[in-house]
Length: 181
Image (cartoon, rainbow, N blue to C red; front, side, top):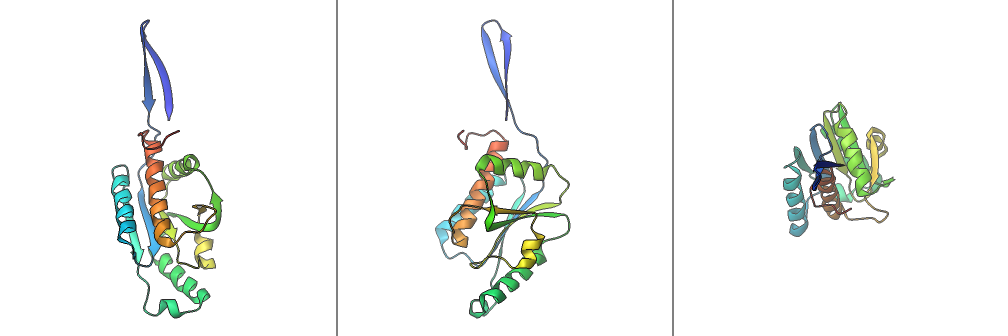
């Protein structure tokens, strides 16, 4: 946000607030497993709708294959990673939600989003994994690993937190009054 004071006459000053410039690119939130809590689904849907005022966004929920939860953890992670990889195309910028990822504040996140949007990627894909995290294949594909918190969240709550932070990032970039400095 650029704030510039401009003197019009000797008796008044106006503040001109400029939006931060960025290019638009499709955003995708990929998550695994269905939502069991309607309230959380409604929150995510509400934030996705709000984000769509600023940028094209889609929330894709990948369904669990039959018998998935009966598999060993390593097999579950491999299958989930293979399903995520199917949605990623060349030219995508992949941000993976990972407990070992970078822990940043909302301003730094909005800067990261803005910098990514201004590069020549086709899409920005945010990926929320299953309960056991990610397989090495999808971790190797990640352009950025982000920790939503030092705490661990169920994936349904992680969807809410991520979608809210994406909305907050766009409100910061567009200088709307949602985020308080």
